[in-house]
Image (cartoon, rainbow, N blue to C red; front, side, top):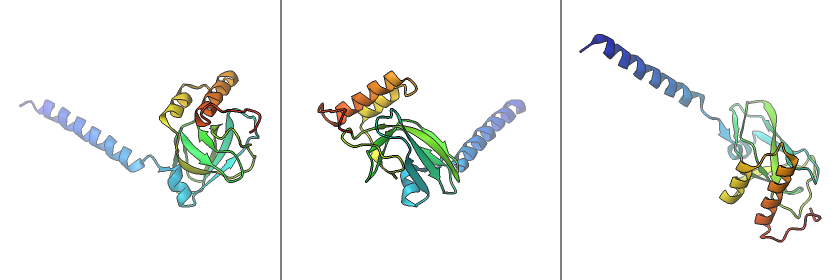
Length: 161
């Protein structure tokens, strides 16, 4: 057999194995819920009622990167519940802002309120998030209304929250 062909195959196998090992070792980080359970994250509502989309600051106090997934529900005892609309990776000892839509039309947003992760939204709401354009106020407002219609089963009063 040709020695060059064997060497080429060996180089490809070593390269693929090396890349896979580096990817595995670097890891994707921990989830928002894991970080919250380990008291390694602070999540704070930044924007007032009527803001679309809302801004939420996530402070990663842990030693591993934090993976924030769109569709994650953020609950609060003092403010409205939200759903994250951005995928982000937040480095250790760093904070970043993510955007979120409200999923509780009857509650008002309270700036400075603390939030905590609590599962994910339905596939129907994830689809709305995936197709929304939060940078376009009209599109973001339309997406917010669609989410409210789904969670309230059509009984939305935009003036209550």
